[in-house]
Image (cartoon, rainbow, N blue to C red; front, side):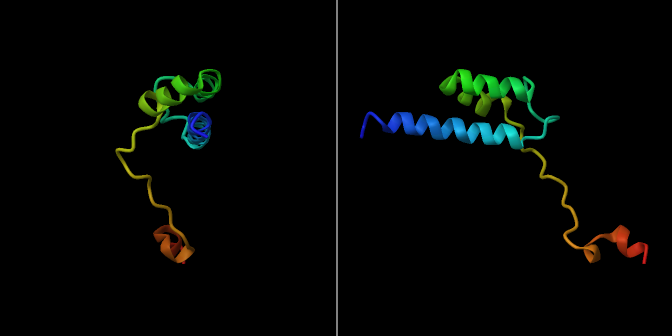
Length: 81
């Protein structure tokens, strides 16, 4: 079991980073294009995943703009009534 744990943790880290790369806004990804980050994470699992977390992940300085959930929450829709 102790020999398997690092492999499982590395696999989970790689999967987490691949999902993050896929969900990241292409305009906000830093340093490299998304396809290159995916290649790095797959080809160099440990280093690529850590590099993504340190240098590639979009900065979360601003919260994303809130979208109206329903038509009555949208001021533009209400103005048009």
